[in-house]
Length: 349
Image (cartoon, rainbow, N blue to C red):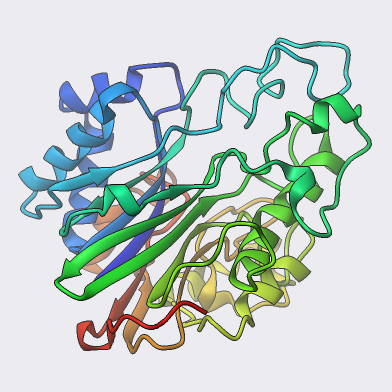
């Protein structure tokens, strides 16, 4: 069973633009669908795909993948925090009408959201959305100095935190713990975003430790998503990522690629402390290439293989990423292969 995560960045120009481009057969969404079909995941978590009523954009992209020869018939997504207006000055800058005056940074509701495509059906009744969880309610939250009335409104998730059970077979349910954190340094509110980025990953540690009012699901489970946080390099408070990677309920399969090693010759990446092979995004300028996308299976699952789709530039597969100076996406897909025979339900922790 192959699980993949990709920060796909398809959309973000305005409501409906991504759907229009997909339906029009534009080259960029078609190229991204071709890459997904080439990877052939059984479960695909996407970040950076606009959310809309009826999941029309997700359905259209799933159909485009099917046209490329790979069927993922089951789609699911909760509404996103990105772009949800509050009508309040959420940052203390005297304005209440900026993309920051939302539950998650966004120019419109659902901008660059999360979504799931799967070979198997989602247990919709059992799915849980933690996106309304307030930032202040996280144990040890690194809260910014804001009006208490604002903290009474401010959700932790910039996009979403979900527990999505997928029914693989009778008696085989896999819980996907999905999220996408905001960048640690961004815009005019760098300190606030730095702390929020840390806490969006720290949420899963607290959740798995049963320190929240929502109980963790029974195993087997997998944490999937984008933390926007490297364990060693770039911006951010790296401890939150290091702690989650070392959590006793999880394992780090360390997906890697040759392409990432070759790309580390860029000056911005040359001095990094972390292994270049584990990088998942190509930023030739500062802060350099980083590991910011993750798939962390529970320790009871048997990992058979893992990788980052970042082929050598002289390989035939490199064509899926497009020209080196204008790739179809800066973020590279991450995938992990898990033995289905290890999907045995355990008792709740």
